[in-house]
Length: 329
Image 1 (tube, rainbow, N blue to C red):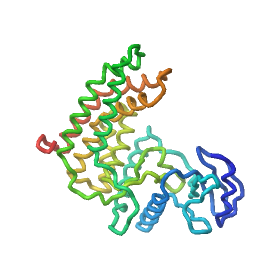
Image 2 (image 1 turned 135 degrees about the vertical axis):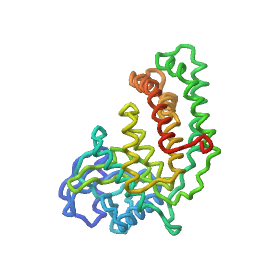
Image 3 (image 1 turned 90 degrees about the vertical axis):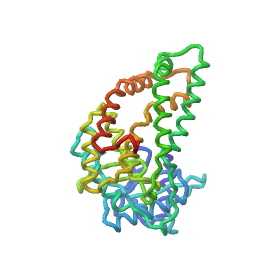
């Protein structure tokens, strides 16, 4: 982010006392408090949708979220001479949620449920995009996995990473096909009239003096609330090695605030069962340079394969705990 963009702050009814660099942004000390100035890469319509969502949930009592400030022309975005758009938002001083602190993680699950309790949107609320059903996302991932396999088969000299990838490929690819096929016959009968945060993970959950705050709504999208819960759970389960109590405590904390329906358990099961981490590693490898493959890639791949047994045991217990019988699967 270039410092020239700071001059655009003159387009706002604020007095900037000083600025300093943050992570991918510029922080501004003003009489209204600390604000954050950053480049905006989405569509203009999405900014309008995002602002409307934030306004709506604050009106419904969910107040610990960021806000977008409008410029003197009452626009949410300000454009530089080179065509780049920038956005000015409120900022809360604090730290990220500690993934090793289960008390904080349980609180984060409760906050997610409170957010979903106020993020149901009526028909007049327009401008947001509708996400694809999960099985459509999986089908896209499966096509990408096929390309990876074709590429690997044509490689004559393989690195340790590529050998490991090929060794485990059939298991994870067949699992991906199985989960996708099962989910294809299970259709969500509820309308997705909720807006999900879209990137609910510890980086966007900030612990401040007045409690937890939720930031960075740029990926907000119409979808089932399961989308957010799944992402948060998967991240923590992977970090813990799929310790079963971690997953169930998160679900219990969420349900204390917003009880889940049977079809949401099914969605959550299928999302967790799909080998998304394996796809991410394979897809990143395929779309990156092959002259040198970082050793970290092999570490991540080995971690996924090593955790698979514990993951399957968690999913089996998940099915029993929430009575997901074969007829529903």
